[in-house]
Length: 449
Ligand SMILES: *[C@@H]1O[C@H](CO)[C@@H](O)[C@H](O)[C@H]1NC(C)=O
Ligand SMILES: *[C@@H]1O[C@H](CO)[C@@H](O)[C@H](O)[C@H]1NC(C)=O
Ligand SMILES: *[C@@H]1O[C@H](CO)[C@@H](O)[C@H](O)[C@H]1NC(C)=O
Ligand SMILES: *[C@@H]1O[C@H](CO)[C@@H](O)[C@H](O)[C@H]1NC(C)=O
Ligand SMILES: *[C@@H]1O[C@H](CO)[C@@H](O)[C@H](O)[C@H]1NC(C)=O
Ligand SMILES: *[C@@H]1O[C@H](CO)[C@@H](O)[C@H](O)[C@H]1NC(C)=O
Image (cartoon, rainbow, N blue to C red):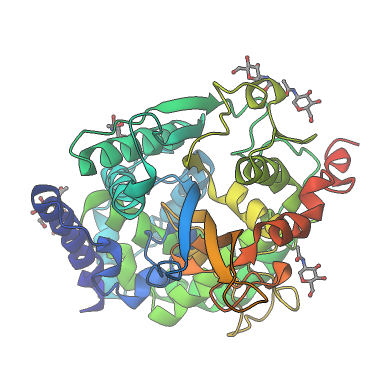
């Protein structure tokens, strides 16, 4: 039962999307079918899902601008992960024999995934996202006001951006055809990637600590079932994701899924949580500063003022109305998970009252990678115009507000005194971003010094 769920989910999504393509129904597919629990524990390899149903703004508000930053769709393992995965598989295959049936497939198994690029499902996710965006925000779009689209230069990110524009165009009956306007080189100034802070540390200390705790008993069990494999605890965090990678890439449940229990997948999720938290999130001294450039671009769009930033922005591009217009109503940027995590942490989203403990998951934590940055995950900042009763009772005042949704989940925005609808006044929101406005308060210099 458990192990056929991934395949069923995949087919449901594919068939659903194909149906939608022909009927152009207008609902958000990802939220319409029950995702099996195991996928929610795939950390950064979890496919996008609506973390909460999208809530339209209150009726006294009208959305006036939308800013999307989105992770690329599902991909193959990165080159670095591929090397580690192959090492772990080789160990398992060097066993003298297998005592347990779920391991028997290894006798004839050959690892055959590609590297780095989107898998077909990942391209489809991006197309779907473009369709959802058109349907949700079409009132903001006209021929003179198409979405302005930028992408970091990684191939999978660019492909996600162009598939998104194709989905947007498709949903509009090919009336509105946005194009990818700016590609930011990952070797240069790029607010959509986290490659500009050479002194930033890694999450190795924390993930190694957790690996040793949760991975050791699993390695011990597998070594007993596969004598001679000599797996070590750290290998486990390279074997568990094979369930996700192979199932998603091959449209069939990977035999690796059967080697682990649901509780073990949950332990893997915590590995992913620590990896992001201490990689570019709150647990990394030079993590959040890498999100500052994007936030300063966001503030420029929200306020209609030129970008003011001394960190990762490309000043030449951001100074030109051709490559950084301020008169659009929908902006879509395509990026990577580590960069989006840096942005969340610089903004103040998903803050924890105490840092994540590398030896013990807090079941009440809100820092859960599969909900922060799944494949095709997205943060949407909406600017709204709201009419509110003035102090006289009858007086109606119009004001500008901001709210943020991450994977459709409305964020509480306590740091800018949001009301019960998650709305902060635009001026409170801007004021809350002192860290970005002050260019990381000296942290950006520490990236190089
Ligand atoms: C491995 O492949 C051989 C030859 O095709 C076949 O006879 C054998 O049954 C396979 N073993 C398993 C465990 O699939
Ligand atoms: C979608 O992405 C795939 C890569 O997975 C690429 O080959 C294809 O050209 C893209 N399609 C569009 C319309 O951009
Ligand atoms: C800024 O962008 C321009 C246009 O793409 C590019 O030629 C230049 O090399 C970039 N500079 C940096 C430092 O990123
Ligand atoms: C996925 O597999 C099913 C059969 O299990 C097949 O009908 C479907 O066409 C496949 N989809 C893709 C994209 O390969
Ligand atoms: C790129 O960023 C560096 C570091 O902030 C800055 O010194 C440089 O002027 C920037 N270059 C451009 C073209 O924006
Ligand atoms: C996150 O929470 C900690 C502890 O409450 C606080 O000190 C810190 O300022 C918060 N960070 C942001 C960016 O809001």
